Structures are given as structure tokens and as C-alpha cells.
Length: 328
Image (tube, rainbow, N blue to C red; front, side):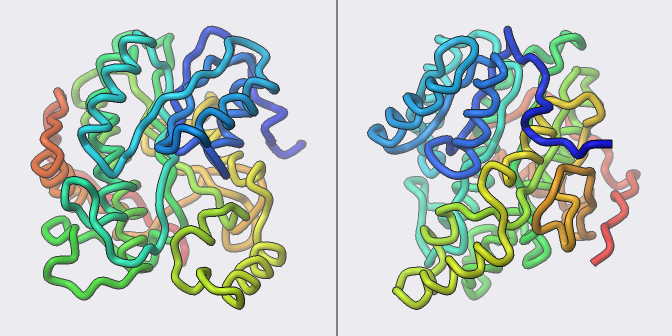
């Protein structure tokens, strides 16, 4: 049986997708593939010039409605609220939200709201965006196949979540540990969103995906070692040796966003050695990214920090068994 690629995407006519961080890398590849199969695609980004160029690039591949751009800075909750209002005014129904945007292993910084930059962008911004966009997702109609796909990473194994110290106010800040925390948070968010949707009796597939080692500009934009000539050379060499093109890195996200065998809290990643590259398949996660008690506490703290409250009740996660972790 042939392995799945973006050429196997179904006809996506009459479906609307919002892709965050769509001005480069995985997000741009994801948006391009969706548009090439007939979807209406909204690209979001925080730089207007790059967003304009990306929309034009995706338009060249589009086989359906013309793609559109939406300004959005996930590191600013005011920007998130403004973007949600504009999105819902222009697109009353959004079938799939793809939480793709992110920063990686940045030096310590803060968002406009005072959160540690990585957790504020990668988790809290998407938590707020998803919650505020829920009214546009057709979750009362099973046939609408509403989905929220959040892009995580194998780097979730580099750091668990401390819901009561998300901003590293008590811990020593380490860029890669902080990044790992955000990717664990992405998986815990997906699991808790799925539990709450199920408890509320609504029809929503909350799934996660990770790209493996994809050669994108993310490696050059954050880590300090990539900010000098030797570091850039080493990063380029590692991408060439270990990585895969951004187009292939987008396959797990596209699979999670479109395929019928993807269900609530599924996690899709590459099928190659160490999940670094390859074709999409269901993958596992470690115990830190599987614990329902931590997921519930993270959710509570996220609501407090963002001021965004979801309409669905908490589940009694203490009675639930965590998902079996993958082999390390």
C-alpha cells in the first residue's frame, strides 16, 4: 500500500481552514496544500508584508476560493481578540482551526501580556484563539467534521509542564526546557479539549501532529547557537542530513486535519526512525504529556491567565487513565 502524502488529500471544496503561522515553513506548506485541493484557506501572520506575499503564493496553487490573510500576533491577547472578531465577521463557519504558529528555544522574553514568550505564543495564544473561535466551529453538526489540530513536537520529551510556574518565575529559564514545556502543553491542551468536548456531547475532533525534523526557518529564528555564522552552518548541515523538506513536514498536520481515521486526542507524526522524517502515522507521547490531572490544572491556569473561559465543563480527570506513553 502506498504511503500517504499531500497528493492524497480529498476534495476540500466548501470547507474553511484557518492556519496560524502561515507565512513560512510548515504553515505555508499546509495552507498551500489545502488550497490546492479546493479549500477556502485563511492564512494568519503578524507581519503584513510577509502575509501579503504568502497569500499571493498560495493563490497560485488554489483550486477553489481565493485565500485570504488575517493579521494575528499570538503573543498579544488584544491582537487575538481583534483577529477573532474579524475572522468571525468574514467567516461565520470555520470547519478546521490549525494551531501551527510557534517560536522555538528563544532567549528569555515576554509577550505583550507579560507571559514568558514561548508559553505565551505556543500555548496561551492558541488556547485563547481556540476558545474565542469556538462559536464559528460547527460542533453541533456531526457531518460538518469540525476539528482543531495543534502542532506539537517530539521536543515535548525535553520538558514537562509546571502549570503553577508556566512563566519560569521560580525555575531557572532554559530555552530548550521552556520549548519542551510548550510542546507538552500543546498535547495536554489537545487531550483536555477532547475530554471536554466529549463530555459536552459536541462533535469536535481535537488532534495533534508533529512534523519530525523539518528543515524550516524556525531553527534559525530562535536558538542562540544559530545566530552566528558557525551555528548557521551547523544547523544547515543538520537539516540536510537529518531533516526533511517543509512540504513533507506538513504531511502529519494535513493528515490530522483531513483524514477519516483521525479521532479525538490522536497524535500524528512521521513513520521514520525516531519519528524524524517519513509519512504520517499515529504516534505516541510520553507520560508527562498524557496525565489528565496535569492537563486539567493547565487548563484552569490557562483560563485564568488569558481570561478566556470555554463553555464546556471540566471532566473528572482523576477517574481517567492516562494514555499509554510511547516507547522512549
